[in-house]
Figure 1 (cartoon, rainbow, N blue to C red):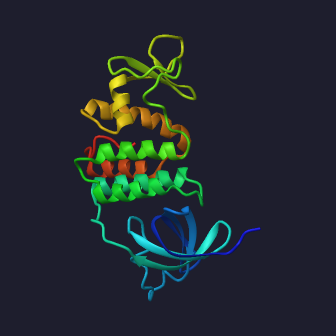
Figure 2 (cartoon, helix red, strand yellow):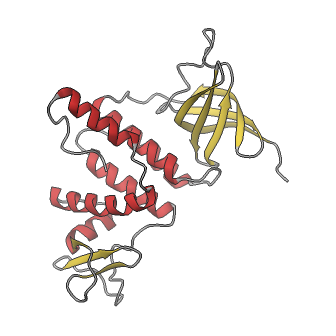
Length: 250
């Protein structure tokens, strides 16, 4: 039996919106206490709607809703604070993060620490720290959903990862010393693994290696359906006829 909930002034962000009937929207919101929440907001697409500018991604909100089951009715949405508007590459990175949250989080499964890091991500993201912030976010998201990788220990013998050795990542197994058996996997320097474990990157090579590793793990969890944010990057690059960025976020 499901009970009707009435939630007041919950901090949250809209991850995704889509039209519903003539003037309404279906929303996917992200909150600290309730995780991903499905909401319907009625009349918001009408000409007289006061909330049309608020009900969109990347806006910090206070959300109140009521209902039971998987889909609730949004009662109010109020601005909570202001964040710098994101454009270009930074906007694309934020949309990418929204999309992987939408794809990988289950509804009504709370992840408060991830929520607050998401808010920090939106607040602090800039051109200088973009790659570092993305890698840390991906790592923490994987940990939250139960697919985090032990980055400081050899899966075969339990020994600590050494910075001067090469390791292989074997799906469903973990990290092992490279070349010690017939298993084939992605090779990663121990130095890069320790950097990712500590979330502290001394050079670009560590970041590149962390990106390769996290992409391999993320792609398994995301499945075969392409990410819309990646397609948007590719479209933007084609429109400008030159690479706008070196690569998509993940």
